[in-house]
Image 1 (spheres, rainbow, N blue to C red):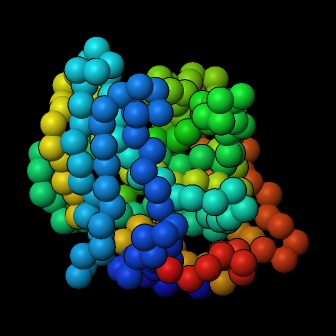
Image 2 (image 1 turned 180 degrees about the horizontal axis):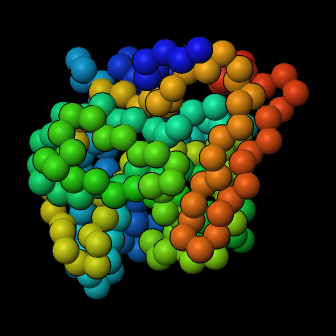
Length: 223
């Protein structure tokens, strides 16, 4: 038995700002800055992207905090952002299934993240990203032979503005109402097998269901 598409909200419309923090290129000696401020309809992600300090590169982002939180997304087909288009710049949404280790200077090492680039004026108010649309990258570069993303063990989400090798810079602003999971079809049996995720030449095997898995981790707080 199937029902219309349904959604599970992760963040919004009443955001808990304490669950997010800035992660800008200042950690690498840059000068970019980002902010995430609450609004009546969600939050506004805004700031200034500087590309002069790092010679054409640069990024400004907000990411989730905490090293203990784990999200199980394996019962869903992708992520959906509800936004209010406000400029013509390109943004990046990403997630990862690992927390990078820290270096001796306490900075985090780099890790593989799965990304999706979008331009609000092209997508409109709804940005939908199926799992197969996410690209595995390392420090902004595509990883051709990346391992499969473990959807049952997501550790971090991120919203980013970056230069795309000098193509954009300066002030940016994006209103985000919510971040949610979506299903194309709702099935009575949550352990229904999913199609493999295609990462180019390599197909990932479906994530195996946990014995007592629910559609969403019972320990995941409600936002």
